[in-house]
Image 1 (cartoon, one colour):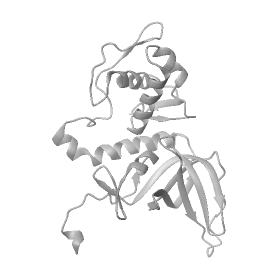
Image 2 (spheres, one colour; image 1 turned 120 degrees about the vertical axis):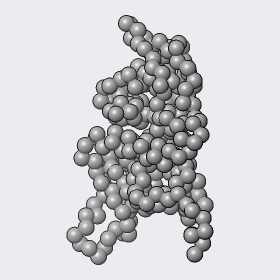
Image 3 (tube, rainbow, N blue to C red; image 1 turned 60 degrees about the vertical axis):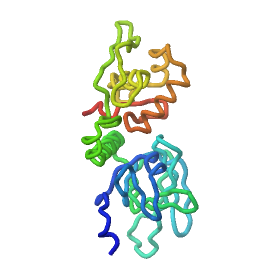
Image 4 (cartoon, rainbow, N blue to C red; image 1 turned 90 degrees about the horizontal axis):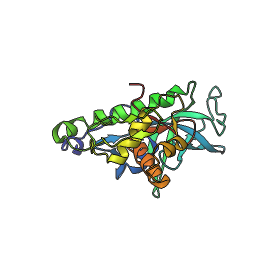
Length: 243
C-alpha cells in the first residue's frame, strides 16, 4: 500500500487546537497538517455565538477569539431516544471534539461531542494543552534548527517602575519576537489577575506605542499561542502564567 512508502508524522490522538490553527492548516486532498503533523480529530474551546437547528443537525458558530468563529456541525441521533439533542444556547462556553472538514473552501468541524464547560479554568487548561502539543510536535525541528519559535516564551524580563509604568529598554530580540512584541508579552505575563490584563491597561502602560500597534501585537501573540483572551476580547493572559 502506498501509505507504507512514505513515512508520515501523524497525530494518533485528539489534538488540542485553536480556530486560527485549523483555518491556517495546510490541506492536501483530505489530509490536514498543522506544522508537520497530520491531524484528524481535534478539540477547540470557545463561546457559542450563534445556533441553528434543523431536523438532522445542530449548527453552531464557536468563537475562541483567535480567528473568525468556526462552523461546527453536530448530527442529531434520531434513533437513540436517550441522546440529548437539545441546543446549547449562545453565550455558553463549550469544548468541541470533532473532525476537520473542508467543503467549497469553507472549513468546519463535524462534532462528535459538544460539551458545556463546567469550570472556566478549562479555557486556560486548553490553551496550555495547545501550546504543549505545538511544542511536542515541533520538537525535532527545534532541536535541530534552534531557530525562531523554538521556545514559547522569551528569556529576557521587563520591569515595572514604582509608578506602574512600563520599562522595557533592556528587551532584546529573542525567540523570534521583536522588542515591541517582547514588551507587550512581558507586561501581560506580569499580570496574575484571573481575568488577565485589559487593553486599557496596556494602552496606559505602553504610552510610547499606538493603539493600532498594540492591537496588532496582541493579535500576533494570540495567533502564535503566547497569550489568550479571557472574559472578553479585550482581556488577555499569558499561556505560561500558571506553569
